[in-house]
Image (cartoon, rainbow, N blue to C red; front, top):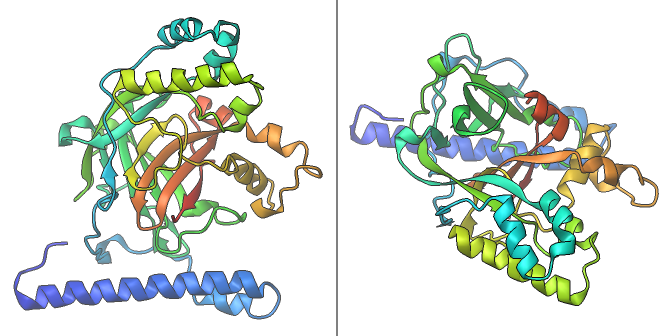
Length: 341
């Protein structure tokens, strides 16, 4: 935030930064300690050290200017064009994957790649949200959530209108592995007529791409490709990336600022949908047992990536939502699994 100038403003900013860092360490320390100690005993006392549920007053908000999201990462490449599925399938036939065309059609998913742009693109990372007076700034545990991304839905194919704002508590950054912290992530839709870009938000541009899962993903492994087909699949993915002018994403790429709406995550564990399904059943994600929980993995296929944003204060954030809710335009069930890196 801008001050009145002089050393006093600088000292105030430094003091606020120190206090914010102190709060972050205390909150995370209390949260982690409560996990170790567990109930009963000290957990209620430790939780009491966290902020209360009283909504903060907007007029007394004083936020430091954090570094831009992804500032320390290498920018991802913008797509130069979007390959359509029919073109992809023609290449697959040329490579000898014609018999796999139906499966490839199911595997290919469109994505909106977000890369540095200009303010009139209708999408921003971070900043301080400019919310209408009748829209509350989302909070959790008495603390305001951080704006992660804002996007004009008219620039997407989502069945919604207005501006979508996705928030997360990067101060305490719950792991997403345990039920009970779902409200640390929130989606807010502001009508287009009332929407304004966030203060100090980083403007981004949207380019569209088609994505195929990496060869090691569960969805590709389930095809049981023979060695010749596996080699052809790798060449198909390489051509898809080259034709669209983007990186060939075979791993986490933690040094690259991969930001996107929809598409496929850079998570190589394939566990995040399972974690979301487990916590939606009020169970710990770490409790998943493939033998005892045989219905969980098939059910987890319903979880879709809504957004991925790299380089936040909590690391890379993955916003997930059930397919049926996304298709219905209901964003109340989003969950975030952060990867602090």
